[in-house]
Image (cartoon, rainbow, N blue to C red; front, side, top):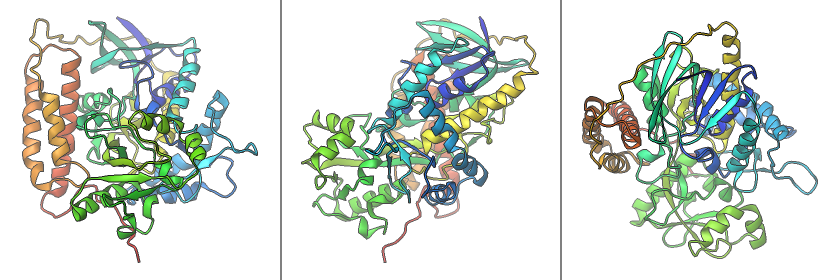
Length: 501
């Protein structure tokens, strides 16, 4: 048994930045599910959006673009916080040593992505997330009051009279850890789908645990499908072709090699992600083909290699030279706009429990995230969570109560096949354009899996924990989607198009 002032579950950008911003006198534990840098933050290619020393831009313009991309379903208060405080956290990352690209005259190079009306995205080539993650890891590891553990799976969390107890599985053994405050920074739900750009840890664990504890979950059916995932047709984790490639002038082409975005939206390739993904599906129906390509061959080859070194290198391993060849792409699950409902200080509906990053629902994204707002959200709201905890910790009693968890000793392993079945249902019934007719049967199948996992004594190992998380999240998503469709012709996640004239 160990006691901490704060336990942070997740070692991505939001978890690490929260740890950095907490007072040095607090005893903090950060738990990484697997390797310390295996997270969606590390995979972020495009950059971090925000107005920082930009005379031709403003938070108001950034807010406008965020609202347009989000279908005007964004929370106005949270969005105002996001865009007005962006400068604080971009400035802090620069101070901590994040190496954002610069122009020849020494200014920061700000790139453009779909949905943005201004060049406001700070980046490190095409691997910004990895640069930020490594900057924060380096910083947090140097803090004497922070302990970072890898390969530590949180199996369950319970509320106590003094805070929380967490059941942690590491190296085949269980440990109960107690804390006055807990921050869930557990990432998204990508692995609930057959194909996703997300890392292996994105199984919705924090969302599922918060749900079982009674926290409010909001808009879990607001799922973003990135329009340009690399399409090699056989890999579950799809390599992302950054939005910034279109921001630098790439064209989308159909199976005939023709550009087609002019048929659907006047913003062409720079329309928001949900618009582009839907346009690809509509074009697939029109042409009877699912072959689509991204074409940047008209740009200078040396510029492409310098601007997108990681993408260029990864594509070469697939025998594609993006300076000469079209890149096969197709929409793929990418991001979650909903999650554990929080306020502007990342407080959930359970006292002492906070949620930051992709597992949270701040409301800033509406029903579709504006490109590169996710890394910004992770920093702004984790910093605010740390500030709130700092105030509350001043008057928090120092004693700890420990919850006793049922370890299911001697129970059999869960039967195989649950995760595969869930992924198949989600891919079939709730992809870019949901299969409204299939939602009911898909929901019923997932409900049976949830009931079995909740009511049968299976061994509590990583397979069981992940399957239960995926099943719980899939159930919430499909239930919410069916409720939206009930008694109406409305289809969830339909974007707002700006029709060509």
